[in-house]
Length: 194
Image 1 (tube, rainbow, N blue to C red):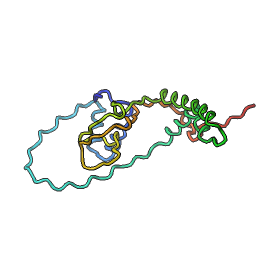
Image 2: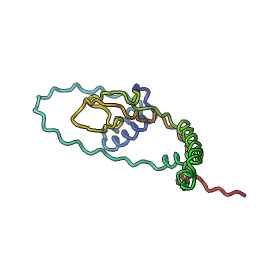
Image 3: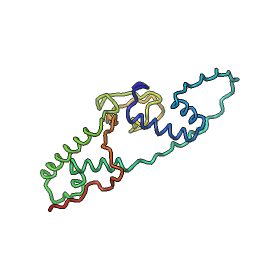
Image 4: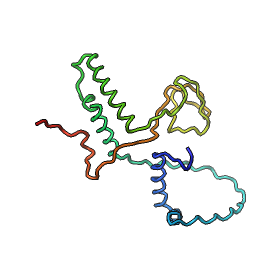
């Protein structure tokens, strides 16, 4: 993906990261303001060669900052799964008294509805393009958020192994917009027949 064609999720990530960077860096904030006002960035001064120093021992990397997830989108998705697949009804039902055939018939309806919701509101693609069971090599610097190592993990990259699951990633999210006063905690309203 080119810099001029960043995905929606990539733009959200960039916006959130830039927001916090601007809050913590007055010089960056001033530069962004100049760009938004249409001013061209000033040419950076030529770097001055610094004397070569012996590198100091690397300080341990700071722990990554944890972001709080918004429950509204999760509740909205749960509402869509309930509306189109009766997902919560199925999961909350005590199925002990039903036969496997009855459960299978209900599961087929829930599966079809869940699949329809996912396809309508998300573009989901595999993380890895290889077929499951294929031999793969993970080079040094592989994305550990996109690939999880399992089994006997010893040593450092490159790692050679068998792809047991291709993984999934969302390339696009198309959740409906919500009214300002919408109560997302009401996943499905109660129904009263008159």
